[in-house]
Image: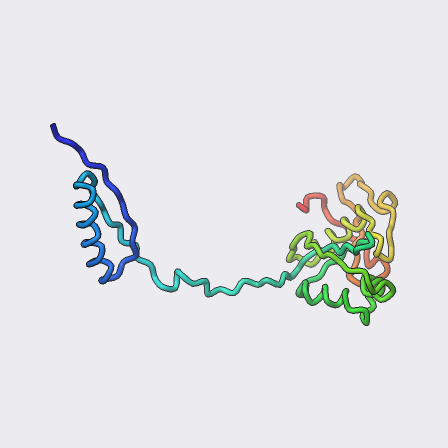
Length: 184
């Protein structure tokens, strides 16, 4: 008796010229399909600025803990609050005195592969995390590798003693007390 036609939705960007062309297009579609469908044009309106991303993305990471792996298998763990790329270049510059730079000075054909382990904006927590990773992984290019058992203890107040290492310091900077409720 009464047939219901299916609706077909067409999305088009709105502008006055498209409106005129769209109406003609719908009329031609109706004649082509024998008016078996109802064509509905959904006009999309957008502001031009939504099409462009004006915010600059900082492709240079700050506040990171990182790992360097040499082609010979040596590893180094470090942290920096500065631009990671700048710090990486310093380590790769044989004129610098960092352990990775000295390794490259003695082994000029070696290359590093760099990984960012994590981002942490809190300076204190970043150094603690770096110290924990160093204690766990014992990277071969670190100046001091200290046994974990002698330096971590759990006392009755549920506080841990954790070693915090600085970037280029060859000794342990400080023994810090932190609560176990920190979420690393």
